[in-house]
Length: 461
Image 1 (cartoon, rainbow, N blue to C red):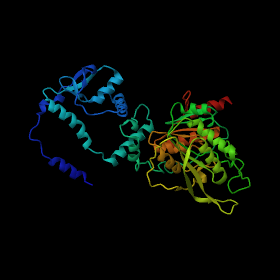
Image 2 (image 1 turned 60 degrees about the vertical axis):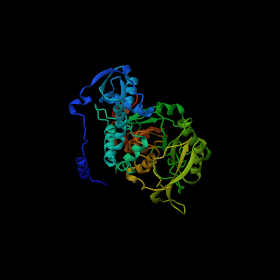
Image 3 (image 1 turned 180 degrees about the vertical axis):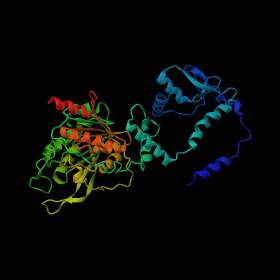
Image 4 (image 1 turned 90 degrees about the vertical axis):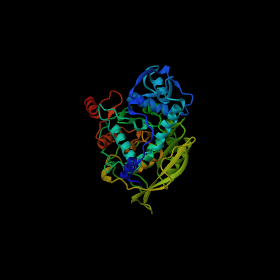
């Protein structure tokens, strides 16, 4: 790898051309105005502008306006700026635009310039480590949502999503980006602030107190934003509310809020999981999902529900925990399983080719999970989300629980759409996000903050 100093020396030592246009004769000194209708394509233009690029140009002109004049010949034919012309015409119609006219140029000079103007830009390269840092900074500023300042969306900077994902890897995009406090779950309130039907806005994320198996509830949450991925930890059919879980046959004291539908087993559990996935993805294709489940019998029921919903299970992921759970069985449980699956046609994968099916992550400490009996490690969900989404993508979780998907999405610059039926767990997830981000949640309707809603509803009781 060349050092920057050596590169500067090479630049300084390069020879000057023997003939040069005098600076006072440069066309760029005179910028004129021309209506778009007065401009036409040069017949020798060989540059193609796909719709995907024009959309990016539209966004650039919308945010910055025109900052660079088009280059035209004396006949009004465009030498540089065909894409800009198309974008500005689409955005503003037949307006006046800034142009530079190349007076006195021969046909050969014009054609050489058109090729050179595009080809020379392609000869440069990116300093990828510094570019990754710059992109991460822009993403962080946008997520910070500083009032009064509009930061650009990195998805509209001209990079392909897969390229963004690679560039951001190593500058905070790997599992564990959430930091040491990501797994802290606040205690569930004795009385819920949230109510059925509430949708809370958590920065770029939304959480709804509703039924994940109800298509109307799901449509209300998504509001037209279709997620490309699902990462979820549905009820296991083990009933933590009764305190009877894997390896134990005696009830244990329990202060947690009940987990809705956690007593479903067998066919009932399969139908429930199927209904939740169908409510969100009945017509969707190209969807990838990680669906966590209990091992053995109830895990098979979850598997059946996933496949019944139209997903094709590709792998079984095993989360190997740092310690086992003491039980009455001959073997103590030290793992949980997850079904990695896809639905309809090709699917996206951004996780590289170096991942196995056994993932090692420590369990959240009991002191960190006061508000929910079974929260997953945020780093575990970061790996799931990072494998099947890129920055800015929506990820859906029909069973939010303590809000782990929201925290993982926040850490990775994704946007979470999540559902939870139990109002007390909605409260837990909202307060967890507020504590993690130091930002304020608000209701989608009325835009009242969490504290304002809590006070008004307490007074109304």
